[in-house]
Image 1 (tube, rainbow, N blue to C red):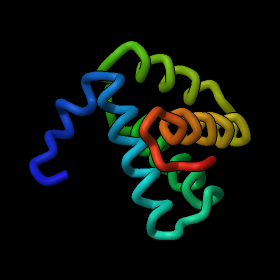
Image 2 (cartoon, one colour):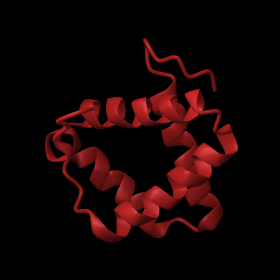
Image 3 (tube, one colour):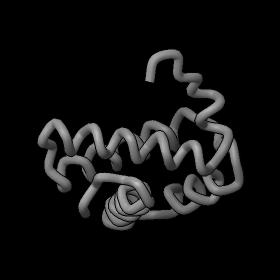
Length: 95
């Protein structure tokens, strides 16, 4: 990911999912458990919700859901996003 322009990745939903999928795949290759990946996704979701303006309608919808969700629902959203990006065609992730 040398020379990665996070602004460009962040503005397109498909690029954003691909980027997240690569992060999940990398974590799995390092031996990080699915539970730990989901917990990290939840932490990242909180940081994004608190500090990043959504760059596309899909991210805006996720932020709105995150804002009204309780802790358990946020864990579920993080789990679902992790599954979504891990189950992409061509992905090596096996959730």
